[in-house]
Amino acid sequence: MQHHLKSIMGIDRDSQFSTRVIILSLPSALLFLTLTLLNFLTPLTSLICYIIIIIFNMFSLFPISYEMQALRKYVYSLTSEQNTINDIQLSEKDTQELANAINSIHRFWVSKNDTLEAQTVSDAAVLDTLPDPILMLDGEGNITGSNLAARNFLGEDIVSKRIDNVFSTNIFISTVDKILKGKSTSERLVFHAPEHNNLQIYAHINKLPWFSKGRAVAVVSLYDISKSLSVEKMHSDFVANASHELRTPLSVISGFIETLQTTAKDDSDAREAFLSIMREQTDYMSTLIEDLLSLSRLEMAQNKELKDKVDLTEVVDDVVQALKIKAFNRSLNIKMVEQNRIPKIIGDNQQIHQILQNIVDNAVKYATENTEIVIEMKTVPEIPAGAGLNVSAGKAVSIAVNNKGPKIDKENLARLTEKFYRMQIHKDMKIKGTGLGLSIAKQIILHHHGNLTVNSTSYNGTTFTIYLPIKQK
Ligand SMILES: Nc1ncnc2c1ncn2[C@@H]1O[C@H](COP(=O)(O)OP(=O)(O)OP(=O)(O)O)[C@@H](O)[C@H]1O
Ligand SMILES: [Mg+2]
Image: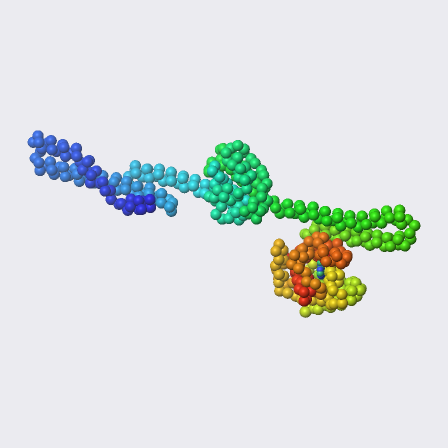
């Protein structure tokens, strides 16, 4: 096509020009021949007159032929890819008018094309802002369009693939088929996508109305509901765990009440022993309720402004003082090391107190007796990043709390900050706890845009390191 255009645009002379002049002069030739044969003119006069007519025809035909050639070249130039519209100046009125008419048709189509292109670009931009994947399908089930979310989810080369090459789940493919065959106009379903991390997807498939032009006949919207289902599951697990944790001490208490009312009615020794157990159980219940409340308060206050100037050295001192007796009872020595002067940080004083209280309390509870707990504070240039964390950039303070004890294996390490999670060995050792202390600490650290890491080796024991930014973002 390009070559063809070039070859035509290269022609400046009309190759048919001589033929046209000869054809135009043919009637004159016949006339002069007849006049010569009838002896009205001599052959020489006829020839001279004929040559004059040919020259005359040549001159009168030349401008028209030239203009036609110019017009032809101009029309081809309009179809060229640059699409620039230059006006053409022709001397003949008719050809100029023709050129003007062609020009205005061309201008009309160029502007229509620009509007269409702009419309298509803005439609695509709007679709790209939608957070969920959207696919357009033609009558055969080929994907003819997609938005950015769909390309991020299913790959850049998604367009032109068939929908059954992208998803294999029968129920989904047959529902799409139902829409494409016109048996239904709108369908919704939930399905598993084994080829896409086994995500659970809610799909909404709609047939486009008959008057919508274009290749697409159906639109598929996809929503990943795996996350919301797992949040729902976490909530129901939480409720189940909380009820279970409360039911256990309650059943112990009610059992003792029953015994005190019946068999042990007049047994004062038993009464004393039972009452002290009941006291323990109610204490546990109130701690649990207190922890649950503080966890829910923290979750609600995620957007609370952090504005206290917190002196971490002071907070650690207070916490250590409060735990001194507990540590003494287990023959533990608590040592504080400050590698440099620790600057005050911006945060919530009470919440930071709670993080340290929970983590140093754990060290005291779970350390091997007769060992040393070391709390080391220093400033660090950056908080280490962590999956799903939104840590503050820039300088931070790290507080590492180390206690000696058996190494915690990987599986347990990964689950320590889960609500109600407690390691079996500690349950077996009958060490008291609700399993909420670390979840609370983690929640506060998240709120402060910091990080919490845990390290455990058989030689060095377990180290929890809290990172808190000096300035909040
Ligand atoms: N320093 C530590 N050394 C060894 N194990 C630990 C340590 N800190 C926590 N753990 C383990 O992690 C579990 C969860 O700790 P967390 O502080 O959340 O709950 P808890 O101490 O059992 O109860 P709570 O703190 O609510 O009274 C603990 O039960 C224990 O098994
Ligand atoms: Mg604890």
